[in-house]
Amino acid sequence: MAALAGFGAVFALVRAKRSEAFDLAITLKLQGAQRPWLRRTMAIVSWPGFPPQSRIIPPVLIGTLAFSGRRVDAAYQAAAWGGAAISTVLKEIMRRPRPLPPAVQVVVAPLGGTSFPSGHVLTYVMFYGFLAHLLAVHGRADSADRGAAVALLGLIAMIGPSRVEEGHHWTTDVAASYLVGTAALLGLIELHDWRPGR
Image (cartoon, rainbow, N blue to C red; front, side, top):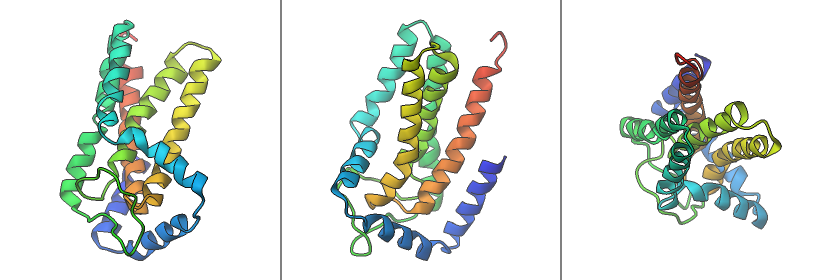
C-alpha cells in the first residue's frame, strides 16, 4: 500500500537524520506567521488530544454508539482508538527527541514521551477518521451527519500543522503519522464494511 511505503520512506529519512534541516525550516516558517487568531485556532484543534479530555472524549463517543444499539460499530470505533498504541510502539523504536527552545518556540503543554510519530495526529486520523466514515457512509442521510463528518475531516487536516506550529513535533513526525494512520484506518474500514452479514 502506498501509505505504508510512504511511511517507510519517512521513517528511513528520520532514522538516518536526513530530515533535520527540512523539519526546522518548516517549523520556523509556520511559527513566523505570528497571527493571534492562528495560534488560538491551533490550540483549539490540539485541545481534544491532551489529557484529561483525550481519555474522556473517545469512551463517551464509543459508549454513545453502544447504547444507541450500534454495538458492532462501537467495537470498531474502540479499535480505531488503538492508534494510540501504534504511536507508543513507534515512539519506543525511534526515540526521537521533541523540538526544544531556543531552536523553536514551544507552547507549554502536558507533553510526554518522544517526538516520532505524533500521537495526536495518529489518534485523530484513526479515531476521528473512522467516526467520520460512520457518519458519512453509515449514518443518517441528512445534512447534520454529513456536516459533522466534514467537520471531523477538517479537524484531521488541521491537527498536523497545529502540532508543528505549537513546537511539539517536527513535520516528518506529522507526515509519518498521517501515512501510517491512513493505512491502519483504511484497513479497519475495509474490515468493518466487508464483514460477513453486513
